[in-house]
Length: 134
Image 1 (spheres, rainbow, N blue to C red):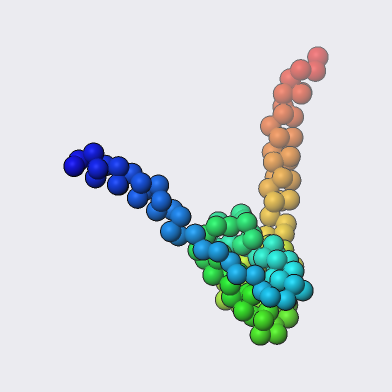
Image 2 (tube, rainbow, N blue to C red):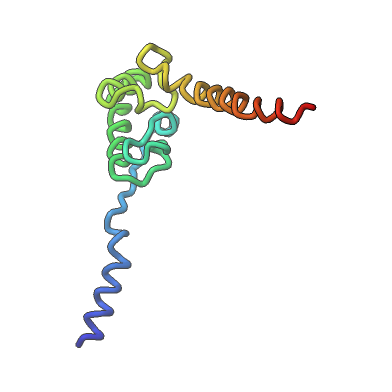
């Protein structure tokens, strides 16, 4: 009996992840589906942060894909959908946020960190160069 319970639990644990998978229903109109797929690659997953909702397997990303398809079917433009999402989640939701005062750190932050690293290395190694000269 214990062996049967152990096998049943093991099978249930292996099958459990498959219960959470949801299959996205594509739009019947091929042009709208192509627009949806393009939008999916322009919107960031709020759970994964480094992935688009096209690549993410999170439930939130699945819900966002479904909502985008519904909005496209209702006649919303791509920009209207992006604006609604940016209003709800902030500009961080967009993989390419607009350049404005509130997103300036997103655009130039990595370059500032790189510049700081180069300047730091220069000042770190400068005394070593002076010590090597005769």
